[in-house]
Image 1 (spheres, one colour):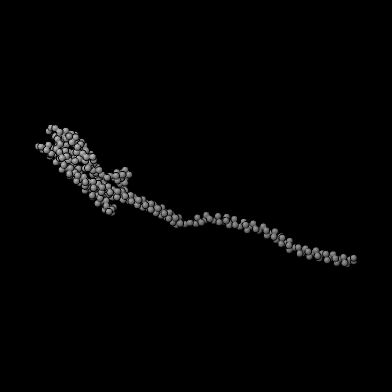
Image 2 (cartoon, rainbow, N blue to C red):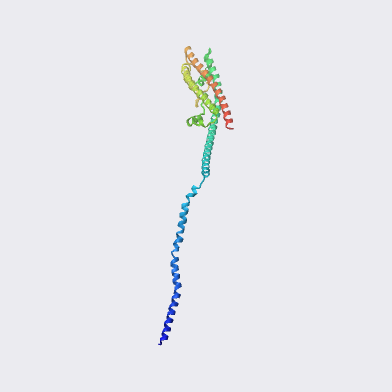
Length: 301
């Protein structure tokens, strides 16, 4: 090979090598650029925590930015809510107490109505009793009591009986109210005083009933010396009701002192019978007035 050909080949080889290097340079640059750009991804990821940190740091500024008017408004709203709740609860309790008061008054009205019916019956029975006691006294102290012993024995038996003339009040509501303090539910002082006065009058009659029972016991002891108990037994039926005999049963042998003692006991019974009749009328009038007042005050039919 000549010297000139050799030089030509070497030059051609150098040109090819230079061209290869120039073609490889962009790939290396791209790779290098990718290597340079790759670390930028964490910067994007770390951006969010910085934002969150800034928001968390700036959040207290929202509270500090409230004005005194905002706090005053919140306080007023809270105060109104508590006050409204208090008034609603108080209104509800007031309504419940009013209903309990009306229920107590209705029950009391029913008891007083039952009392008026009993009092009317007792007053009429005491009027008849007074007439029988007067007849008994007159016949036994007559010149010839032995000719009227059928009537004397009948009146003597009934004189010792007090069950039909005894007043037993319907005081269940009254007693319950005393034990439970239901009187405090009544708002009107006038109503409270009227009920209390009625109860006092009832207690007074009950005390006189006890006194009457003691006088009847004294009457029975004095009658045991004048009347034959076997005759009493003949006058009673299966239901213990007294019937008037058709015959003239004999009286026991008694003296003037025993008759005087019997008359004194009879006088006491008649006097207390009149007093109880009088008090029963007063109580009846008081009961009627109480019913009128209660029905008007509570609009009851």
